[in-house]
Length: 223
Ligand SMILES: Cc1cc2cn([C@H]3C[C@H](O)[C@@H](CO)O3)c(=O)nc2[nH]1
Image 1 (cartoon, rainbow, N blue to C red):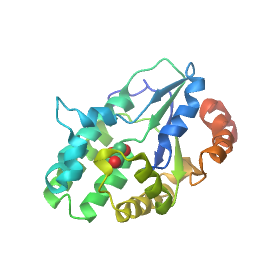
Image 2 (cartoon, protein in one colour; image 1 turned 90 degrees about the horizontal axis):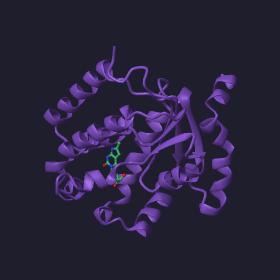
Image 3 (tube, rainbow, N blue to C red; image 1 turned 90 degrees about the vertical axis):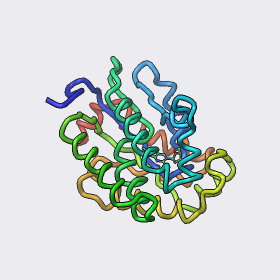
Image 4 (cartoon, rainbow, N blue to C red; image 1 turned 135 degrees about the vertical axis):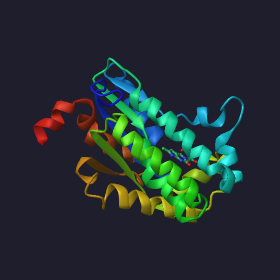
């Protein structure tokens, strides 16, 4: 059997572009902490791999560091996917899928990752498909427009992202749409939220799907 098979609870993945409000969404569910195991994107790990800031290197010298960065992201995501919890629900910020179908894909299309690097990553993804259980019962897609998230990214001013152009966000948006809206293999487990809404109005969007996340049996009754 696959590594971690049968060890995972109902798992919800929060997906969306840079600046789409994933952290804010996740924080909304901190009030249900006793029922939900919340796993944020391990950006701090990517910023300090035994003292090396891979995230900064990836943005500064992408041709050289994008592949090792994505390789490390994949490892940290698998650690989150297989992390044990006694709670009935796991809520994760992003997943191995967003690396595979969005970030790595975009870097390959932009020739930031060349054929050799891409094929190595694809071989790893295929091996992982066959050997490690990755639980994904529901995907919450925080759908945004590139202009909105670009403004938010600029306002948040994460230092490593200071040179990210809006074109990059437009490309990532398109790949999220291809993966979560157009791909029949995934779109049956996707709920789409209008994440362009600003903070005071998005609360009602969260409320609309609270039950989908906290009460997985609620989902089963629906299906
Ligand atoms: C799964 C996954 C998340 C992720 C984030 N990132 C970047 C986008 C943001 O600038 C930062 C934090 O999300 O890391 C990336 O390049 N590749 C990724 N792959």
